[in-house]
Image (cartoon, rainbow, N blue to C red; front, side, top):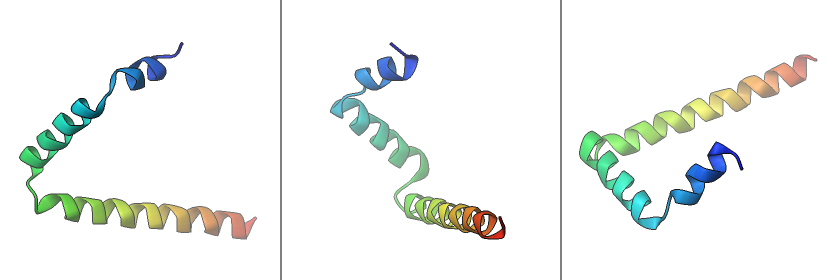
Length: 57
């Protein structure tokens, strides 16, 4: 049994709710959409970079 399996086995719905509330309290409701937009743009750039590497091969 791996460490990841043990950790994922201990996370339940109440823990997820508590984590979400902590994130909202730390960053505020207005910052979270901005952060998610940044994450989305980062993923888009990453996929574009991978596609460019495969095209040049």
